[in-house]
Length: 291
Image 1 (cartoon, rainbow, N blue to C red):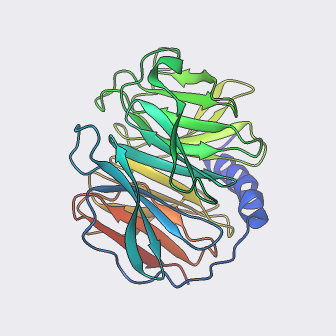
Image 2: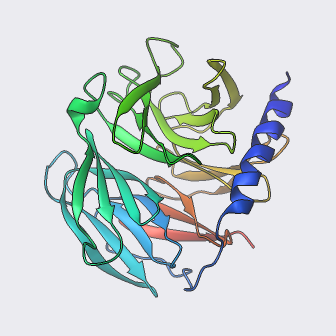
């Protein structure tokens, strides 16, 4: 199958997921947020609140935090994390890839802000080195990338079920192209997982049923964030070169914005009119209008 046909099939499948999402966005989110402490990932909840993971001192345990942005104002939501990176929301819970563990934070009710360890480091088949991005499937499973040593050794992707049990999906021992997997994206079948690699800058699709890994597109430098839009396009961020790209149904890659110091784990607002870009080194959360 030709590469552009593979991309078209995958993006059409991803479009089905996007169209099924709640796209209400009750608050404007167009103003850049500054003064953040190494923001790595961002996600918007159905109520319009935006959550940002802040690493703060890299490699320093306990000084990481989650900030919530509501009506353009930022406030601290949860503290005491290590190096929080990828974020995902399932139901009323925010999941956080926090260095070598995955945390679960209640977003509502009397337990709002309460942090639990959802999957400890010891729950993984091998001790994780650098847990990075998170993605959920339609069944409520989480997928987390381990970027290894960020140089091409120790990379892996894991699945975590609702009970916090961890299983290996694929690693560098099974396929040498798995160097430092970062951004993840699941299609609506729950069988095809896309990932962009931080070392090679290549975007892959992995069919978990057939165990086939396909190259989809390349040239993303330090590939970081990966999201899809209801119109069929995908967006990829390049941390190393400070850029954001789009990939259309034909598999064509286009640079849409440059000039970031370190474009990290991107996300769309719920109405899909805006792309949110954490600029880690600048300490900012930027917003790119897609209208």
